[in-house]
Length: 148
Image 1 (cartoon, rainbow, N blue to C red):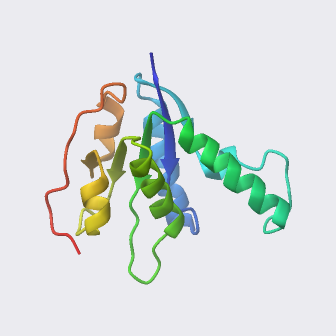
Image 2: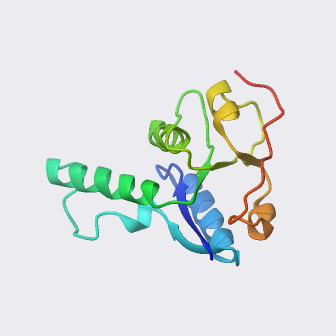
């Protein structure tokens, strides 16, 4: 049995999109993973106009369905105090509330918000680790650095 992954990440600029795509590529190469749901790619197949009430409703419900069907949420923690992503934080919170394990990937490996640090199941800051990790039997690996 392979794990279904929900990949939560910001995709507001080229750097974030490149990071998201790199994580997605590594996850797709992991043999313990069956499917990776990526909101940037897997919502709005209907092609609704961005920002319309219909698009908002569709994207919200498609994302919630992706979260609900996930065995693990992989969240790219791309925190910048002036420009953090509340959508990714919502997705982490939803997963924690629904007892879906959360793996936080933080490339910069700096301090992490207390609620995220305490809510995650597995903390990772090396992309290669995502390729080898068994997502079906995801172990616990806490964040041990500074929190704010």
